[in-house]
Length: 118
Image 1 (cartoon, rainbow, N blue to C red):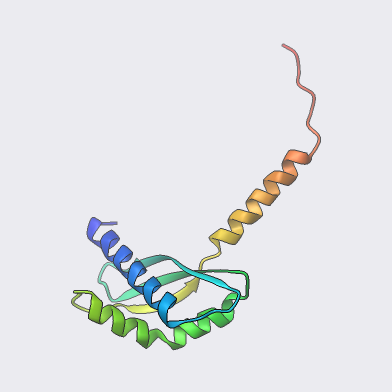
Image 2: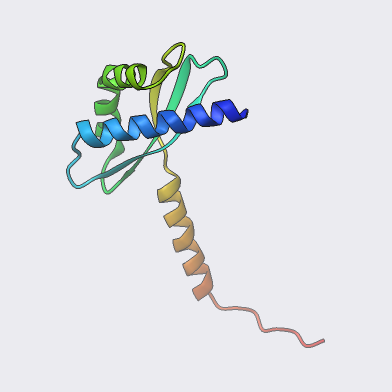
């Protein structure tokens, strides 16, 4: 990935996170924008959303329905030739990480084979 695309990804992530924090309220759910991936032609952007403490489907529906709000803010705040079309997706990496840590804790509790002497 080029350095320009990396900067655009970070810029979009920051702006989308700002709008999501100011414009939307999710009760008892932590919603974060974990990553943004823009295509090489800057026409489309995948926005990865992490949801902790609740179901991700209503959050994605709410964000997708309000896509025009995000599009207009990006258009106003950035100096891009064209505003990418956003598609929101669930990022389950945090919950997968917790599951892996729990599995490692369980493996640690299992009986170990005796060490052989050389």
